[in-house]
Length: 295
Image (cartoon, rainbow, N blue to C red):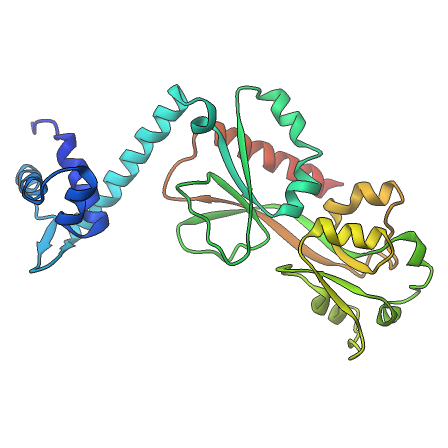
């Protein structure tokens, strides 16, 4: 039976494989280049396989090295997650969510108290999703996004279908009898919104007039505030605007069929298992999403 692996050799392998350099791995680990090189020779000797092809100024992984790197990374991640599950506390044990600001403000905020009451031991860190900036999965556990067309290695689960439709303040609703009347109002567009006015107007078979005024707003919250004040008409997710509709602060000027359907996705990395706390939060989000879809 083979003797147990030396974990220092494994650490040297992971750093060397990630950086494709024994010298850079040595700097990261606080070792000498000769020390890392020796670790790799000893590891290869014990495994009976070459892990690297040595080049004059660099190294590259062999097929065996590529396969072993996947195993090592998954094992190290399982060790990190297990340590966090057992010993993690405070910010290190927190579940880290990245989500669209409108989703956080209008959908998550009214519901999150129930989760915190059920799981008082779980802390949350919530950061905004910014269009065009990829998620660093070393910093986040879960992402909620309107976009499932992401890089490989991610699992996307439909969280909920969400209708998107125009809303406005009651003071201008009487002027909007048909979608053609939108030509006389300011259209409030949220920067980065994926389902925007062009798609909705096409659904309504309306060709925008050259004089149609479009105001670009920085956030869904600002767009809702502008709409409530009668400044213009905004496009909103049904789950976001439902409380404001019930309170009469906003109204739907057009009937239900004139809406597009958007889907929010719950996204996680497929390479590594979620920590227990993150799994509980994910399952709670999916359950709440199912309730929203059923309304």
